[in-house]
Length: 145
Length: 342
Image (cartoon, rainbow over all chains, first blue to last red; front, top):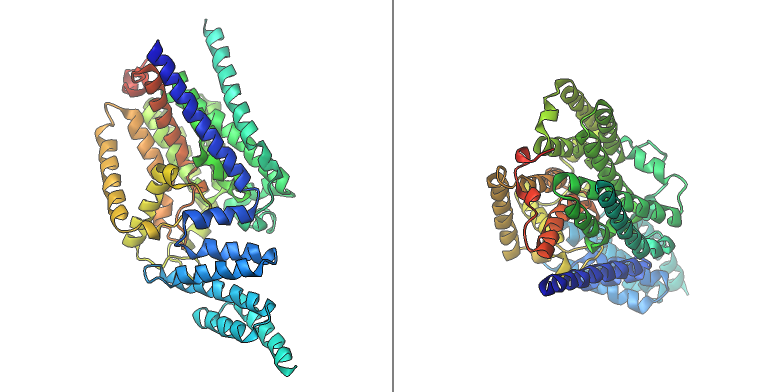
């Protein structure tokens, strides 16, 4: 009887643990920022979570944090063991988004360099082309002043 | 006595469902995230292989979408209980339902609004199997309709007839002897594939620029195998998340995953006569994940995409939990089914 009660207690503890972890996941999914922060902690070598984390920081206008996240994405995408897919898409997207952050920070030269790098990786991307055109237009205005 | 036992089981299942509802209820307030923007973006039935999912999502805001997913999860949990009761014992049914409803391995399918399609495939598959095991003409008609509905919920729903055939063949092979129904099922399988065929064929050879994989098939299959093992067996100590990194685990773990898969497939064959439940569970998982190996995309399998496979995992864990509690293996769970009384 004693062992049966002990086994019951073990199952109750396991069940409570399961429910607690699931409850925690419900809270994490409440915010995209929490979601991608968690992903970068579990998968720090993968570019995509860092890119999406940077996007969330950009939306919140936390440019410094966004810049850090995009740099992490670029570093993760540069490792030779990553797939070609992540080297190009991951790096291109991170470079494109970081270019936008640099423009917002008033660094048009850095922005142009990054968006050119992104376009060299994925020439056919409409999103990167739109970024390049926006930067070129605003940079021309900035340089003329 | 039977009525009393049935009432107690119903009460226990209700408690499991209530606890699960309580855990997930706060998700109603979660916003749309990541790929949820696509919900409701395309006209309903513009994509036949997902038409039913799109129809259920029509006009949904985030609250309704998450509430819908929760409802599906609770119904699926009840379905797992019924299926596990049929395959093993009522105690295993309750334990399997608890695992399926409470374990965080199924949480992404509930919390990600975009995962509605996988929940629907699981629902219709369970409905088809439970209806078919009834053995009546109406039951088979419902099974046929449910497998078609699975195919119309998501392209991978085309596996629903295979899971139905596997379960019926394992549990009540005599039902398959009714040739007209088998022929109907074959027709249904063709119809389910036909609903998605135009998409499936184009996925066989996708360029990596348009969503295909950069890896050749052997490498892709090896990494996908590692991803499946990671999510089914290793997620617990290493964390649940929206985006797992398979490539960082490659190398030794890839080799270990390949060895494990070979061993498991061998066990499935060897256990077929003595422990058919184990063979059924392994076969279920293999069928549920097999399309991910055939159609190579630039993504490896996600947690929510394993929710159909989690049905069999929950049943096995349910047997384990009951065995642990009673300190003996439920005899009905391991006795060959043809030796069991009806």
